[in-house]
Amino acid sequence: QVQLVESGGGLVQAGGSLRLSCAASGRTCSSFVMGWFRQAPGKEREFVAAISGGTTVTANSVKGRFTISRDTAKNTVYLQMNSLKPEDTAVYYCAAGSVIGATNYVNRFLYDYWGQGTQVTVSS
Image 1 (tube, helix red, strand yellow):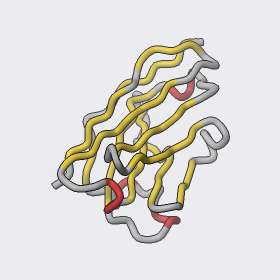
Image 2 (cartoon, rainbow, N blue to C red):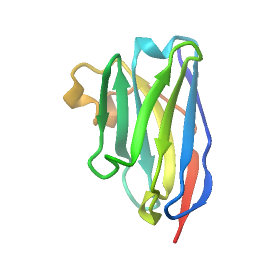
Image 3 (spheres, rainbow, N blue to C red):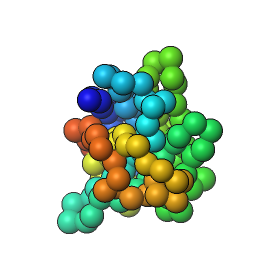
Image 4 (spheres, one colour):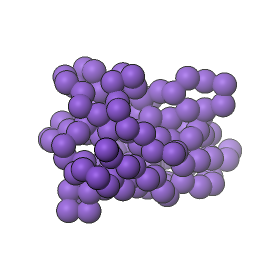
């Protein structure tokens, strides 16, 4: 079992930055592909970024603005979000899974464990 707890969400103005954290317990996050997804009201949950070993995958919609990273000593994954836009407003979820193949990292159905989510609101 893996427990994931997100933190770092909040209200920020457009153009601002936030850093989300996902603390994992139960097993080390290096054992899994770690991903960030987001879900806006009325929309499906969508892929944001994922990391496994030295491989990172980032959605085109956030590429160049968001960066995923991992601190194995702290068993924590981060999502640094810069140049935030109102359309980034969503609940952000951390996920862990034994996903094979970087092209599959975008598929939320392949992740086994999920956090409770943290709200990010970007005002215009």
